[in-house]
Length: 623
Figure 1 (tube, rainbow, N blue to C red):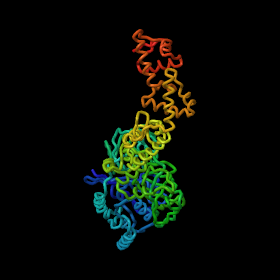
Figure 2: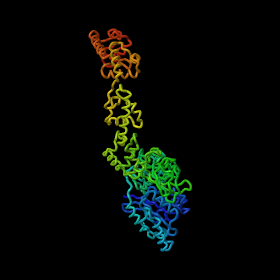
Figure 3: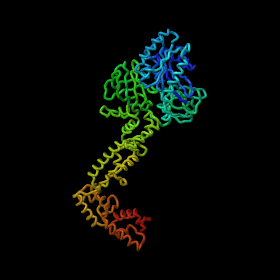
Figure 4: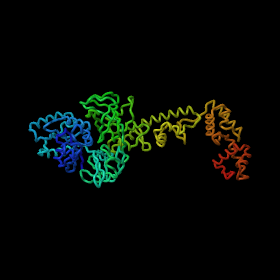
């Protein structure tokens, strides 16, 4: 079954609701006040059914003060049925509705000349010619114009046939993207509870699915689904859907909220966008506040232009929109802006990035153009690059661009194959960012090695601390791919670096070795050596570590090092003692080495660590 959404448009009292009733037999004016006043105040709904095709109809109000209600219904429509009364012709709200449909990117439509029964045929012909001039240069140029009478039924069947033909020519909404249902109505049914309705603009939903309502932040479950007054097990993009929610109060949800599967999209209060002003609008200054409409939601926004201080009528510009309240949007969504006072439509645009960084005037603006005119692959590459060292999960890309997940998967694989992006721990990074990181870390390590020639490398934690935007696991995985970087246990160094001593240090090195050789089992501490040779303790520590790594010394603990020959002598003494006794007390060990308790205890603890001795009570068993 093919599903299409048709929206009515046109000036107040031009017969939109009567036309819907003539087409479907359903009166879309459901409110008591609408019946009493004879005008549409809020959205009304009906449907037309053909073989293999269901056309859901959203009837919108035409009065200028009710345009925001009209906007709540216009966001999800595939084609427009534009009503222009034969007795009045084109009127102010006719122009505003057409401008809104243009800005929302609607590409298909039919013009119905209504109320033909109350004027002469030659008047209808004049109105038809006026309509042709009116729609010139818009998406309705060349669209079918059908004179009708809802009262007499004239041409109603012809209009039905035309609706079918035009509907079959529209592009189907995708059932394979992330499910989004902007809520346009909330009510309760006795025995069922809270029900929300809307037009599914992408994805699919089923009974018992776990869903969340954003930005309200409510998590719940789908208790039941209806589409066109019939209970269904599932619904998909392009359908009008009523969702019965479990355990949620009517007052907890508002028009403008969006039904989503849990964890798929985050609300945002900032958007990068392109805005276009209508030709008749007043100039819009930088940092102006406007009413902002996207989907069924409405809030106010501050418009911060990029490299423009004032936008003139008919012109377009890139900007960042700072929203008063968070909304749900994806790249590619269309929106409308209206002045705060007097309230009229001044323009609209397209969302380029629903999760942008804070921008400054001096920032590179190339991403705007890429997001606006690039294909899906180049736009995703731009977003991944913009994520910098944070990288981005593929699931976040699903929520970023209003495309099928399969199309995004294909684009990502193409980028990986072409070497433009790298995937590390399921996080995507742009290759330019990875290469810059390689260069930066190489520079950091080179500088570190120059300052610390005796150290084997920089600690992982110290280097990791310079790049806190990357999680540790991912950071180390990235490091492992760098050709110029080597990870050695807890240290990181350049692959061609080896610790080395300066000429001055070489002299100190020789003197330290000689001092420790002579002192044998009563070696001076690291602190004592630093004082004796007038060097800093850190320098003494680096020299001792390097000598121990080269096998010239043995590190007993942080403070005590002994000559390698002395250590081997210690082992010989222990082996000789074991031939007489297989246990040795601290006092006995001290005596056979000719040292003091100050050194005997650290020596034994070191031997314990090497499993040469094992402590048993106050003695050591010699292994």
